[in-house]
Image 1 (cartoon, rainbow, N blue to C red):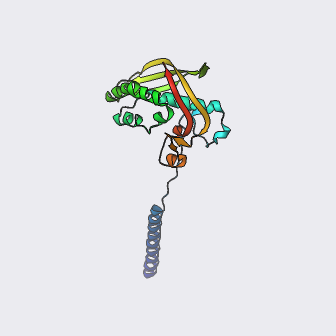
Image 2 (cartoon, helix red, strand yellow):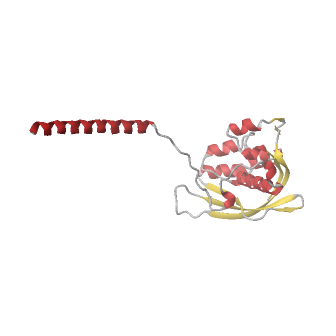
Image 3 (cartoon, helix red, strand yellow):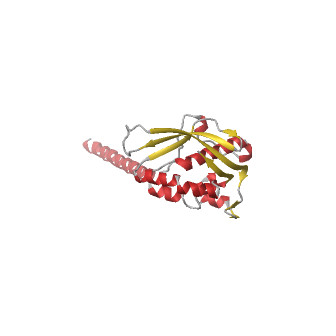
Length: 212
């Protein structure tokens, strides 16, 4: 009787050992069978600022495209990052600011506003620029109300930004569509976008005069 019990006990131990080896192997295989799912998080509660499906430009109104580009220009014109390399890139002749500006506007911006941005950046300040009201056509100019928020210190979560409101008048050239030339040379839009270029630079949009 004792031998029978030992025999069945040995078989049970063997079966348990085989099961343990099987589950160990399965866990090892599962570790090599990993995969990553990509998720897109909702960046804003407002529907106008949510990520959506790409829409062909011919399905968008002239007003929608024009106002998006004006808002982008205002952002590029004023914003400050606490990084000196940022303003160095923005003042280059192939920057999005250069693409959206006429030669005189870009030259004046580099001479005045860009110097102010560089000074604030050196001090590790940050500034955001937002269009806060309806963009209205007045004569040859578009009247844009904007708000600037400037944080004078970095790494201070309790710091209240300095708020400045202003009005800027823009004289623009706009045609809804994608440009085929830039700076007098043929412009390969697909190549530009694939290399990480800012989409705002591909449109037929130019600011020829700025009044503040």
